[in-house]
Amino acid sequence: MRVVTVQRLAELFQMKNLTTQIDLNVREITVSDINRPALQFCGYFEHFTQERVQIVGMVEYAYLQQLDPEVRRKSYEEFLSYDVPCIIFCRGFIPDDEFMEIAVRNNVAVLSTERATSAITAEIIRVLNEELAPCISIHGVLVDVYGEGLLIMGESGIGKSEAALELIRRGHRLVTDDVVEIRRINERTLIGTSPDITRYFIELRGIGIIDVKALYGAECVKEKQSIDLVIKLEDWKKDNEYDRLGLEEEYTEFLGTKVVCHSLPIRPGRNLAVICEAAAVNHRQKKMGYNAAQELYRRVQENLNRGN
Image 1 (cartoon, helix red, strand yellow):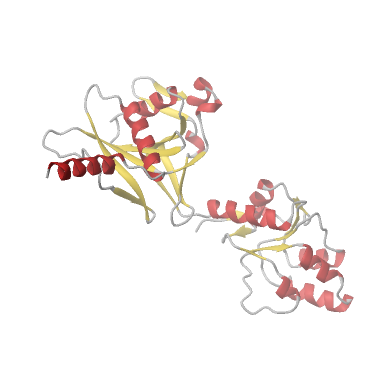
Image 2 (spheres, one colour):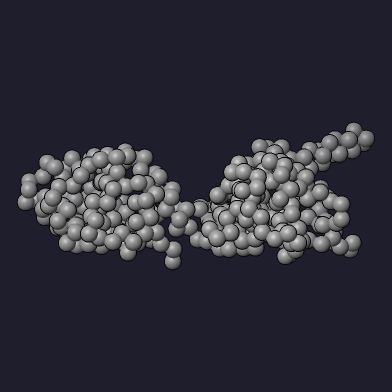
């Protein structure tokens, strides 16, 4: 199971740790949802999702301030008895000393941010969805081509890295070479990233390792990219039949999500970078509602009908 530490969350959003006595590295977040504990401060704990990050905004803070001191302390005691990952106070609000004393006693981490409640809530959900998403690692190369995430796959030594290098020289951006970490953000979105150790490096047989960022500049690399299209490189075989029209899409699947996939036979003299560019632009056109294969089919049908 993937987890995110409260320490990492605090660093990502530059939040202030109000409970310095507590080690935020041992406090773990396991779900991407959040909870605003208005009902819990009122004493309703049925269906309380204590595994979620708890966010206190203006409404919750104002409600606590107008409570009778004894009722407020009872509310603090009951709420802070649960093992929540952390509590975040928004808009620069600072909890009172009584709240902090009970939180430290119960080992509950408390953070504070100047950001508005709605804004920080949306950002935390987005980041946690990405950090906690199911993840697999595959062998391939991921390049951003005209905004389309192009995943190039194939057997070792078939020319994936060489194709990626030519695409980089043509102004496109490398995300990762050799190992692609794929995360399923939602039902339709796959995000590809590079392992930290190999980020921005490409291996070229006969030359060795090159640093794309150092050689070609920061504009030629990218940290992450959605995976929109897969190109599978394979050795050309005379007896194989290859799709020449593209009327029907073929798909490959990662983590239960389908991605359009084209099998590309390799022969001497074929410019892989140009073909990959064309595939990316063609895929983009299809998403915008234009399909060249269907247009050709329509024209042929019209011509046949006129002939009849």
